[in-house]
Image: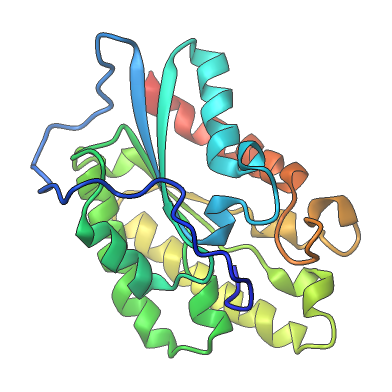
Length: 232
C-alpha cells in the first residue's frame, strides 16, 4: 500500500496496447468455458506481504471456479505505492485483452497517504472507473468498486494521527461510492473488516500493515455474492 515498501513488481505485465472496442455487455463465456477477470489497484490488490494465492483476486478466482465449475483467467494490474495517476497510466498503456467479464477497482490509499490534494482523486477516479466500464464490455454491472481499507487500525499506524487517517479514508470512500453508484456500478464496503485489525490481529499481515489472507478471505465473502450474478 504505502510507498515505504519497495515492492514494485507488476503481477501480470499488460500486453501490447490494445484499443478498447465498443462491445455488447458481457460476460461472454467462450467455448472452452473460460471467463476473464481484470483486477486494478495497488498493494491491496497484489496482496502485499501474503502469498499470491491469498490475495483477494486469486481467492475470488478460486471461489468462482469452484462454484461455477469454469476457468477464470485473472490479470492483475497493480503495484505497491500506486496512486490513481500511476494506475491510469498503466491502463492507458494497454491490457492483455480488449474486454473482460469482470473488472474490480480498488485505488486511492496512496493518494491519501502521500498527502495528494483530494481534488486529484475526484478528477482521476472517475476516469479510472470509465476505463474499467469500457474494459467490461461497456457494462457497468460487470464492474465492482471496492472500498479502501483503513490502515489506521494496524500496528504500523500507531503513533500517527489515526483519527485523521480514518476521516480521510471515509472521504475517499464516500466519493468512490457516490461515483460508482451514479454510474450504475456496484460498490462493496470492506473497510469495516479492516477496522477490526487491532482487536483481531489475525486480520493483519506479518508486516503489521497490510491485510492478511484471512482478511482477504473476508473481502471475498462479501464480494462473491455481488459478482456471482454477473456470471448467471
